[in-house]
Image (cartoon, rainbow, N blue to C red; front, side, top):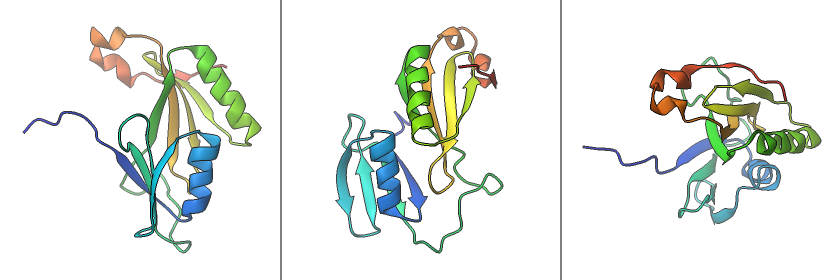
Length: 144
């Protein structure tokens, strides 16, 4: 067996409407479908669906970093630091605190969605990883 690509990611949320407003309204992910079974909302970044949220109810425990499971979801937003600065400005305006990180091959903003799921927005800034794959493990604070 050979996996060709990552098809899509589905995360669990307590309130689908609230999370839909966050992922569509704040991050700008286009909605392509909704399902009452679940309920679920599907978003597309060019394929039929790339990302989805599944409602599990208001009584669900919030996501936290101390349990096994998904660590974060990363969305590429471009190839320049200016694009990352624009994204940080939009997050700041929405009252969302983020942590800028320089991974050398990417520069990123990390923050939490309304349920505590970690999200990364990143820009590709170097292809040094092609010669040295270990470089993807680099991380330092990014001043922007």
